[in-house]
Length: 243
Image 1 (cartoon, rainbow, N blue to C red):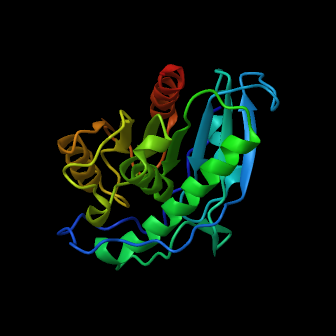
Image 2: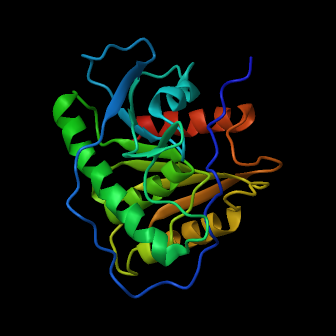
């Protein structure tokens, strides 16, 4: 049967607005909960490349992890749990559909700090080959972008899906990219999180020296259907094989 699609955000993100000159500050971060799932018949005790995956609004790592069923390459998937309850699942940051980028950015920055703190804990806990790959859907896609933009030295690649990076979190023009690769995936028919802001995010990062590109999928809304999932897996495998 068809693989599970990642759940959608409740209302989606706003279009990108004029960048704020204010520096976004984050409170002291704390480690997040996670679920670990080796793939490719690997064992938890093996030294493996790591994929840190972040679910969307209202979802949870247990269900989001089903997206990776059948991933054949040997890897360690670490599925993070967002900190705030939301319906039957969780949210990564305070969410209101009416919020613009300036209001949403501080919450994303705070969550990004917690993700990076958790990366440190994960690298101490597990035998890891190379730097991690970060990826996620919707809210998780926004965080994937933010980790790459704000902490490029911590990861080898970011693969955001159905998310964008708010303008206040765009790095400065002279920011170093540390060679991190960013491949964003987005449905062209996504009505909840339109592709326009994602395209702007990728263009802004590329202008700032990042290896960033966008792949779009005609007829795809806010989800990860089978053809998109197949392409996603191919990009993940290539990222795990990179230095």
